Image 1 (cartoon, one colour):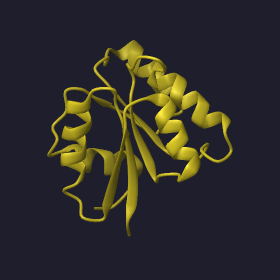
Image 2 (tube, rainbow, N blue to C red):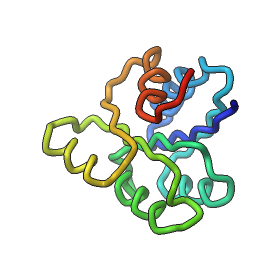
Image 3 (cartoon, rainbow, N blue to C red):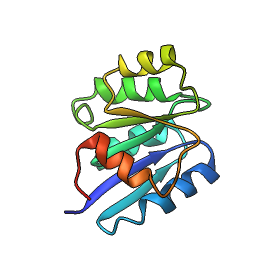
Image 4 (cartoon, rainbow, N blue to C red):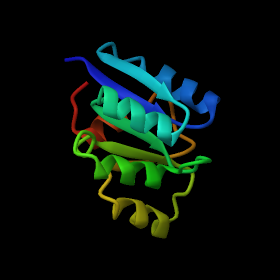
Length: 125
């Protein structure tokens, strides 16, 4: 079963590392976005099966982007996993209180990333 995953990060190098790691799963199509507004537009026009969303971005951060996705009936049900360098327990609780599908910490192992993402989404790979 093919799945489309939208990777949203303002850092091009991070986007490419995530894309490379996730591309090891043949049935996953990876789409990249550099900002929250771009991610919202992509989700509205062609909803992905999941979004991997950076927390710290200029213009519109990850939690704000997530809030916009939650407000729109077209994008409300897309599972979102936050990708963040802020992994202190209080911060993790704050993100988990957002009702995201999960939180992954930076730095991450690109080889383990598909397995970690699939586990959070309860997808088999």
